[in-house]
Length: 198
Ligand SMILES: [Zn+2]
Image 1 (spheres, rainbow, N blue to C red):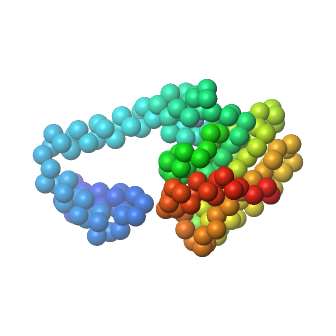
Image 2: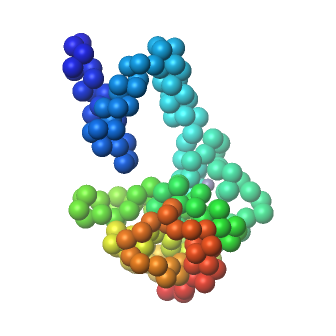
């Protein structure tokens, strides 16, 4: 394989990472070229190990090294209260607030008509099955306060309303267009505590 092809293939692969543009991808590829082969191999092994050992939690889709993630497996958490978030990183943001003692449900995406993602593509199956079994008394919709998050929240309300469960939304009094992960812990904690019934 020619250098050009090998280099371009790698750069193209790096540009698929969130927030990595072509320039950054090229810098990463050059950096890899300068690394000793042993380190490159070590990196490849670490990436493979991450994939092999981390799986979606069987209950909530959070990253997990076991069958259930550390939050779902924690006996001290209220299993009938479920906070719905878009991505696992949102869980980290909410956990930092220390204001929440329920469990989570990760959609692993959000509705985005511009990107061709609609409600049917959200991973709702495991949540609906818990709702059907009557295992949930309260859900708190914590999608991002932006257009896609709002569309996703409306879709969730529509899907969850038929079940006997209280539906709340976090009370975010901040401008539209931000993401859960960028909201400071105090504001996010307050938004959770002051959640509004839908
Ligand atoms: Zn879990």
